[in-house]
Length: 115
Image 1 (cartoon, rainbow, N blue to C red):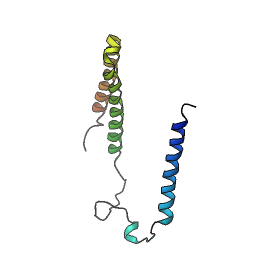
Image 2: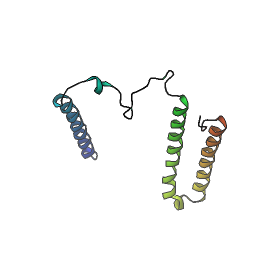
Image 3: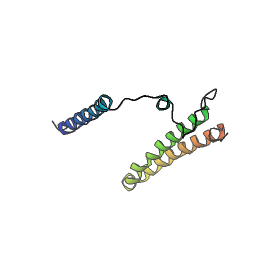
Image 4: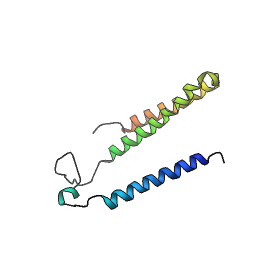
């Protein structure tokens, strides 16, 4: 059983986290007040705007995640670039071509415009 240590470590980790969550909710002080029940927003009184958050912020966040994850794929290539040779270089050039193509597509669609 090669992975027995990892399994035991994972089970103990989950048990400790579960124990901490249960103990803090059971033993922690419970003094609710109207001020504590309000959402915190930089010390200012929260304002409810109609329509919520513009979808532009969600699009910008998703684009950041997508490009960040795609660029994280370059690290393994950089580590083994010499071993991969010309084939690896062509593959990463093709990969970067599609990343840049996606960037220009998002730029053309106006997804990166600040309103």
